[in-house]
Image 1 (cartoon, protein in one colour):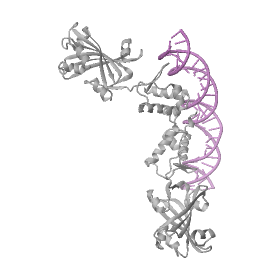
Image 2 (cartoon, rainbow over the protein chains, first blue to last red):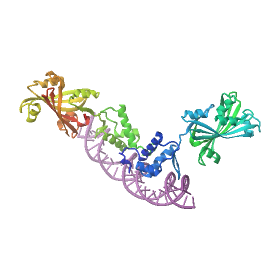
Image 3 (cartoon, helix red, strand yellow):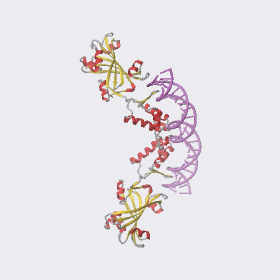
Image 4 (tube, rainbow over the protein chains, first blue to last red):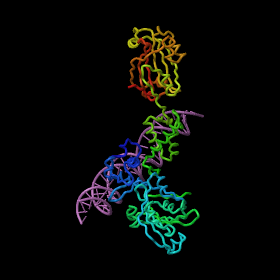
Length: 242
Length: 242
DNA sequence: CCAAGTTGTCTATGATACTAGACAACTTCA
DNA sequence: TGAAGTTGTCTAGTATCATAGACAACTTGG
């Protein structure tokens, strides 16, 4: 089949195929994360050559709508979560604003001691007792980030158990009488996911991650918690107010 | 410039040009009957080759949206007048319903005698005296059809003068006491415009016309007038109720 | 490990799209 | 009548679109 068989519309065949697939995604016929039919199957349904399908898929991949995995298939990319970086950022609010269901899960809560850097961030002395919380945050069922959070074990005794129960850092702080808090300086870098985080984030090895280090303070400016978060870069997009 | 310079959109350049021109017509930037800019000028505004513009114009002409006249220019085709064929059809009502101003003009009114066919249509004897009225009907300033109308000279004495004054067949019949009338069988054929009608309809030679033969009767079924009308096919579209 | 199924890449061919230039045919207007 | 401006029609060359086939590279599941 050649382009002009389609009523000489002036629209390229691969564009028609791409639009069709995109409509299928928008309609929900293909959900985020779903595997699309194979290139051969798509070619048959649209009655075009496989190369034409590849052109269409390449255009969609260029826009971040699908992602091809060699030997496996082509998958619908979840739309990136728009994650505004403000002094008052609450994961649950951001995810909720995106029309998705926020979830949190405790992976591990252990005792730790402050390194010199952690102590400086939290306004404590080196070697001070800390609670280290490993947690994962999800939007619907998609893991967004894993974060390591440190709190003073003296100021927040039993923080691990509280977080396990509430699954929310905001509620944990409320439990200890902190009504509101603000984010201090936020440092953002990027890296490659390690094996541990890859498993937690359900990411293939070698994928890029956004690494965020931040410390939250109470309204008086006293440090409360400091975090080291790793976001699946392909699932989130940070927005900085200008 | 090549197609893919336009962001590799998968939409042919000529299609973009055609869409742009069509939007201009829809927006009223180019009114019906207007002359479009020359092909060279369009090519410059869209930054494409003149041949690409010609492709776009050809597509629009194919759909009857524009009409190219060699040596003169390309013009916006007036939308065809929707002309419902019902037993009670009044030109002025049809044109008015289209939001246009109906006009009628007498070309010629002469005495005639009935041929055998005219006599049969009008329920008269062959050779009976007739009035023959040549008239033209327009919507706004566009000629729609020329028609030859025959009436019995005995039933409608001085019909030519009355029509010249009223410019309306309906009013002419009213003048002779006919309050209402109906159209009988209508025969529709097509042909090529002759030189006389071409001048009257402001049509180039060789254009197709719709030829309508019909006889109007009063409510008792008595024949009143019989007509032979030639419509500019490109300016009218007959609608038959189903 | 193997087989089946998947995406990635290469070569090749024909049809369209777009550009470029030139000239013919025609209309309009002075 | 002639010049200017218009659409119509050629030829030619380059880039893209679409098709076709083959094989490599990889993943998955038995």
